[in-house]
Length: 199
Length: 315
Image (cartoon, rainbow over all chains, first blue to last red; front, side):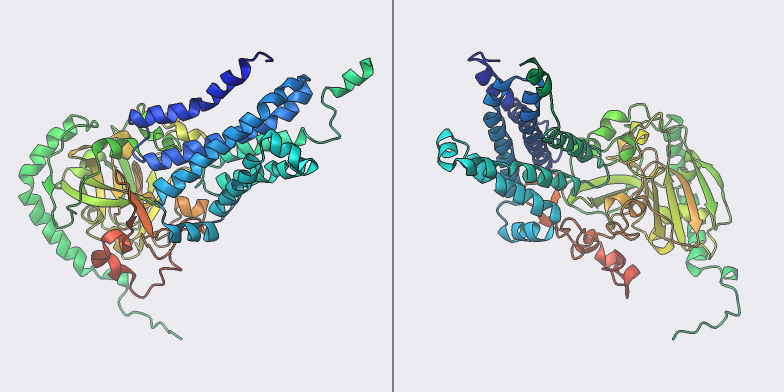
């Protein structure tokens, strides 16, 4: 995990869904309605990377492997990368810059309102993800980046409110998010106590 | 206030003019289509497997000349939740489904209830090919060459009484052949319904094929409805029961989300789905969205069915 290769390898792994998407695009494997398929695919991966990013802290506590923190920023940026693909698919392929329709969507369709808000809130987090920005912002950096929690909740509702009848997938992702949030509860002493006893 | 005076003659005692005229036409047609009937026999003998060619007569009066949606798209991009909720599930998971032998139970307010074999329903009629637009409630659309019989011609054989104000349809329930039924995404079996005048409308097609061939399983084999001016989910698949009713039948999507899916569910660009716009649609295979047409472009034929009705209320 501490190898200098671990980060580049993880980077390549994170691009894998994108490669699959491009491959499926060139081999005509994106269903009869490719635009909808690309939208769902990129949206689902943005959510998955958001949850993977949120799992780093509890995983660190449980495994007591602090080195995991090295990967968190990259994972978060990949969540943003897939969210960008998702949003641009909507903007370019789905609506083709039909601003009237887009404004109506954001204003009138609750699932788009929350999805759009989540995307907009991700932008300052991505912009301030550099070391320099973190230093400059000091304590505010931590406060700013705790936006990830409401963002994740918004994304779950975005998914939940768009499905017609099969709510199982968004409910599963929602439960995973709940678990990741509960594991952060300060009262929960995940694997830390034994360490303290030994010292 | 509207006061109702009792009728001197009970409505049930009057034979609908349309009905007896049709009965005559039906007898005439029976003689005319004797030859076609012989041809159709060969179809039923092969067991009506998907892909079997059907002998049809093109009905141009009710067909659009728009570009057809490719066969592969029509048969791989389906909503048929009994086989799963992803669009590819029906084509991937319907291999075990046995569409033959098949029979349909007919009951309720009619003179000829009973269990009818697939062949007995189809055989007396000339199959027609009709190219219809299909508009899904999810804002995508296709153009499909269906093969079928006007539903009215079949329903009249069951002699509905004047109490038959509605027709209810039920989809087959075979969890062992339909893996999507293991989860209760909808309250199985799938149910749909039409007002009797909608069911008797010449556009309403009892469908057994597409692209000149027997229906593939994922498209609702062996017998389904196609109601082109309503959202796709009204066109119920794999029908096993037809019931004539006095009252509005319960329908699956309406039971699932009554504020989103009404009984009528006519294609209407002016009445949005509560969660998305119905003003535009993406024709499968096209990049730019197109405007959705009132009654899916069939307003000239069907608008009169709803004159005086508030379509915002009766969505």
